[in-house]
Image 1: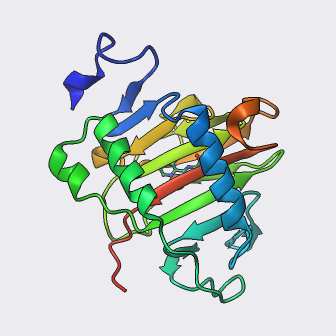
Image 2: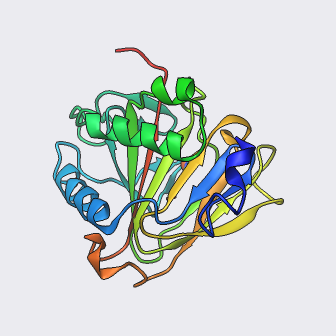
Length: 223
Ligand code: MD6
Ligand code: FE
């Protein structure tokens, strides 16, 4: 995978932050961003509304709606038993295709790409002042890559290490349309959002305020 990530072949800013963690700026066109933003507005209408989960007694500042499987600290269920008991919306086929394209774009081989079948997406909405503490995504049984898409205001994303939630880490800007893939040795790296930069969204991205981030994953669960 390394050979793909030479400055000559890649756009100016695409880079492998650490092995397995690849950031591709401006991966989604503005038209794609608008279309996904419209889907987001539909998802937020239910059957399960956006909700701020409580983690160890602390309400998160980020609000989430899930597709396929519902995430609650620290497990996946089909029904949002910690919200309103409704079953979450099905995982859309177009997102599976998009996930595969994302792996292809980040140098994953055809076997990994072809078998990638994400079955859950956590769709986070960040309003003014929202942040996300350093965490690992480890509630999935599968260690297939996580594909992250950002739309709206840009944020400072802190990408850390697999050992602990402190240094060493790299702070980078995730802007509207950016793709970030965590796979391989980076799959369990700690990461978080330290700050959302208000009013930095492109006018044409389809979001009137704040930031959304979609992470698609394979749960490795049946049923
Ligand atoms: C966010 N993203 O960008 C939060 N997790 O708002 C994540 O927590 C995340 O971007 C796993 C892999 C990629 C991510
Ligand atoms: Fe995460």
